[in-house]
Amino acid sequence: MNDLNNLYGTEATLDLELASRSNYSAASNNSHAFVYLKKTLFDQQIEINKSAQLSNIANAISTLEQIQHDKTLDIMRGFFDVVLADMTYETALEKLAMAAIREGHVKDDYDVKDASEVELLEKQTHTQVSQIERIKAESAQIKTRAKLAQLLDIDYANRPDNVVKPDYRQLFKKEIFEFEHYQQALNNNLKLKQLQQSLMAIKAQISQEKDNLGIVLSSNARLGDQAYQREKNGHWRVGLNLSMPFGTDTKQTNKISKLQLNARQKQLEIEQYQQTIEATALDYYLALKSLRQIHKALLIELDYRDLYLEKARANYEMEIKSDIGHAMVNITDSERKLAENEFNYVITLKQLHHLIGKNYEI
Image 1 (tube, helix red, strand yellow):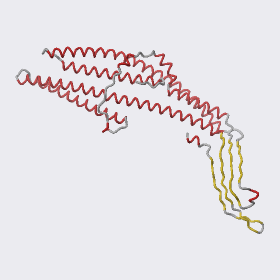
Image 2 (spheres, one colour):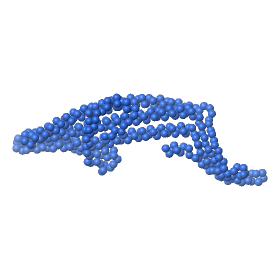
Image 3 (cartoon, rainbow, N blue to C red):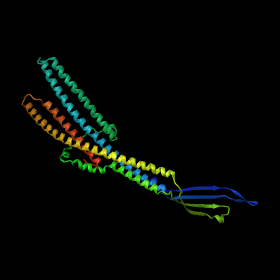
């Protein structure tokens, strides 16, 4: 904005001269010292350019809002990845513990000749595979935290180690609108409004250029003194200047033609973008419907896993053969799938609301 305010700045020049001139048979002092001041009061072309620059500033602000939205989504995804990595690591630990216990049981049987060496090697192999999965899960924890630290612009040493899994189940209690609601609201899309404002600015500039007479109004002043004929010239002069070209301006005609072409291109860009965001909104809407259905299925699965775990725990306490370890792994894995589904729902919901020009608060 400062550059726009300085378009009509005052120009100042200094003119100093030490000189003499012939005056009949004698020489006269012809030295002078002047300060010239000139200020443009109105320039039609400058006013047109100011309108174009203001439009560019508005576009830059809109672009910044989009960048901020993308940054927010990246941070959310980074945080969710950390949570999921922790839950995957917990599942890997349970699998490893279960494999180690089974290996220990077979080892005891092998020591008393109730199990073969093949059975023991099989269980040892399962334990090693589970150990590898644990190491991979631990590596994922480190990588996701490093990425989140980078997104948050903090040192890796200050990475967030302890994270709490957010619970978004209440979001699924809120019904989503029919697609027509989101379709109509797409007119509020930030980028679409930016493109439409750019088109309006181009059309306004075309109109201004057609009315542009090249008028420039300026003021000038001369302050100072001169030695020769001082009484006739005085110490100061002020004046107003008006300039306006005559005839056809080829440069202006070409500029108008270029602006008209830009307007047609911008209109085409708007139509294409409208089609794009409508298709994208439909994808998000259908994804939300699907994620809601998956959420219901995962809740049922989790209830089943929980009941199965209770049954396995009861059998274990009564010293009845039980697969309690397997049941614990399954319930942890179901919890991770449910969390991942919730996270995908939140991200998709935020993207859909951004499309319709709303900052959706979770």
